[in-house]
Length: 380
Ligand SMILES: Nc1ncnc2c1ncn2[C@@H]1O[C@H](COP(=O)(O)OP(=O)(O)O)[C@@H](O)[C@H]1O
Ligand SMILES: [Mg+2]
Image (cartoon, rainbow, N blue to C red; front, side, top):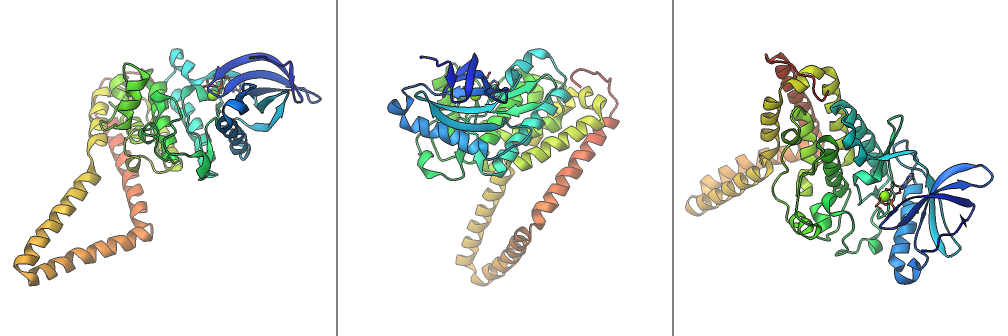
């Protein structure tokens, strides 16, 4: 590809790397002498793939909508000398995958995950989905500041034109099952991919493996088995971190966090627990493992649905044999259901559940802190 010396008001200085959407350069902006990053699309992109150029422009449009400390700021988009380009904040740092080799503490890694989750939640808050969440798209600098970048295949709200069902976009190891199937995706796809990112950052391993990318996509399309809890890969990681990561990684989006805000709240709660009891957190890997296993694998919703269906069949049977009894049964069943629905509509059930989860978390944490065990300080 022919590389121009200048593009718009920017002088290209050095190549930073190449990705699926083009090449990224470090550049200097005239007049104000600002250092920026310029992402260039190949010169012939418009001719060979007009949809790609449209996506590229969407990237800029989507990202420029928000300014947040944990998101790379987009300065502008344009076309010059035959190249479509996007100008953005230059991040002096490394992509998140290099943090794995640094042997940092769990608390440190978790704090980085929280920053990234804040960026994601801010973008989701204005209706922008990333769709390509992976460690390479999260950078951190010397001061530990984390920024999510590359809304390369982002879409704005429900822009139907660019959400063609059947178009697979993203990186296989991080892809959500719905994305791997080419289904329509929503913000929960980022929750899944971010779950894979957190897993990898915490353990250096990926939750789901396959011999090649093709098999990875095929497996992902029908993902049923939960990932092994992170603490299995890296003993010493507390059970409440297991719980957060595992909840992101359900194959069925309905079982994941429904919003990144919910996910962020749980990340913050886990950080609170981590900070409030650093020694006991890392002292009981075996107990943590057990708690993590029990906390992720029970499909309560499915059990509930099955019981409900069995009850309906039972009622049906009775209504054939003794109609009076069935009416009494129906009334006793319907009234509590109606009351429950009313509570749900008022948001009382969610509030109650949230409070229960929080109580449960704190009680379990206290119990573990009190349990006699030889403390070890690895990972905190
Ligand atoms: N704003 C930026 N500041 C600094 N480096 C960047 C920036 N954007 C991208 N890069 C670097 O350029 C490389 C290529 O980026 P990209 O085209 O997004 O591809 P990918 O995300 O697939 O690696 C990245 O891996 C990153 O190291
Ligand atoms: Mg990128």
